[in-house]
Image (cartoon, rainbow, N blue to C red; front, side, top):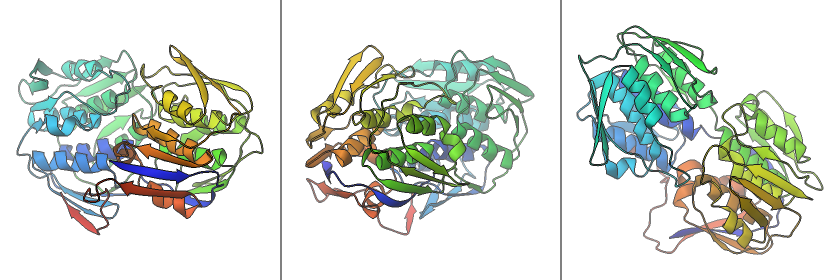
Length: 435
């Protein structure tokens, strides 16, 4: 089992380049199925989840070539309409194959999803929207089997019960090739959905309302491949902002979109940080003393649940008591016992955590439970005295490109070791990768 070893207590200073957004890259990669031909995508992060998505596309019959952060995909031919369990169990985003396969092939067979164990996250809203478009589903053997009578989806009026991100993406991708107009209300508004809509529009889709709670889609007969650059990862950016703050450092992030980070920036200002924003840069300067912050996770444009664990780590250093309420996922405080192992004092009552800050953190061996929990433990380790070991790094490999290299470049004393040196770490140090 790989582990990260952190010798904490060092302020981080310097510049951190931000990678492309995982949560935008995954739906955009699968959306290439909607337009047969060769696709060229840039600023694609080199992550395990991206590799898994490319493997899924390869299994379907769409080969790819990776060169650095550029990806070429050939979706001219779809050989199979199935997203099998051995791939979907590793990454919940594989369920996004459902909409594009139904739109392109008129059928789809997708295993029920896996991914981080942070809640039930059902796909009922996906199925509700796709059924409104004319798909019919049967659940058996752990798979969702879908088919479209007549071979083509039909536009429809869809009202989602909750603003689900992947549900919105799945329904949107299906609707762009449906016959007629679709009105989808109650959709999620995250920047990654806007980036997907922008990509689909570049291929010829007719979409209005991206970034609002209502999408209007006029279905088209065909789409044509178009180049696209993935937007910057706002969660990675937020994580490094916290890294600067929690270590008493001074970091400048480059290649970011500050407008996508408004709720995170608000929380950091409340904590006492000094922030300087440019058109594509953010500088964070840590305060002498961190102030406590109360926050509640909400769908965008509220505070993102994917930054909850990182802000909790910061609040362990605050001068006072903070309260964090989680409203998105019912099981997203699994990092609390591990932070407490480092000396934090956090108690949980239902979906509300109370963080009593100001106590010194000390290094210990901790184990990650999900992707963002992993990041919170690394952040706490950077601030703790002594040595911290973080286990279960496969979570971090799913969502943070070149994490160690970026931290080392700004002064962190971190290293990665493998108990079994034969284990290949991802990403491989090669210029090209065929999938």
